[in-house]
Image (cartoon, rainbow, N blue to C red):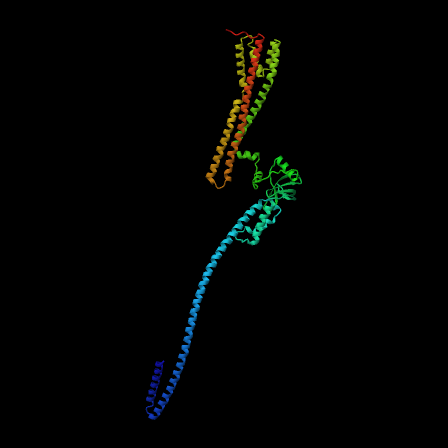
Length: 472
């Protein structure tokens, strides 16, 4: 500030000197007066300037002091703000952690409810209870959306669905309602619901059957060919005359199997081309069996009567009539054997016995006709089935080579062909082998019976002295 005053004084002095030089020709007195006057004015101005400077200095000091105070306040405020900011940041971090935990809990609840809703939806789709509580589908629809938060109302609806299912699973209800028939037509019927497992019906035409629930909660008749006993049990149960009802405990799997049951044509088609040779083998074996049964049964039934007639001729010593009788009934093996023996009448017993054995040996091929063929057919049938199995498996592996194993339905054709031919081959071979064994035993019995009748005839001849004594 003093430097400033000095500069002002110097400036004033220069001006005075300048004025003095310019007015050199004036009188010294005037100059002195003027200089003094200006000097005095300059000093007064300097004093005023100094006073103003002092005032400005004081005011600036006050401002500076206030600024310092404000700075201290701002610093303390900033410190408090920083502390508060740090505290808020910590609280924010804690709240975010809590929010994440709550989000996980909410997601767990949402996932649990979604899974339970899916299970409930799968349950009500198959449950016959849904036909009486169709609003369950609407209640479950929002809960099946993954992004939808169920809320307490949704959880209550879900619990209500399960509670209704549990309650009704212990009840048996009978009512008259509308069902969808096997041809898709709507009709009225008496419906009997047994718990949450099965429902049966009887319509106005007297037809009975099982019911299933569709996606709209409607009762649909199961297209299945039920046996006479099953139909009778269902009808008696609906009418209250019986407490016995065939149940499906598989959750609809049996119904699906009944509705998809294959007929004879489908079964034959699934067997492939090799099923026809197996049928030809079965037909040939059947014809042979019928012919052999008819032939062998008739032989056994006539042998006792034939022997009675021949014994009567022997008692009367009527040999000519005996020969005529054997020739007349030569279609029977017993008569042919006895006729051969009579050709050796008067010979020794040994000759007669040999004649019997020879005659029996001539009759055995006729008795055993077609039996070896039947035995061969019994061996061929399972071999054809095995050939069909191999063919079907080759087709299956060929499909696997081309398309892989992603779609099991593409392999079902070859597997069906393999299994059907094997099944049919064994089903035909087993009765063929049994009938072959039965017919063989039948032939053995007939041969034994003929031998018995021949020995009896020889003894009768010996008794009447027709046979010679033994040769030495």
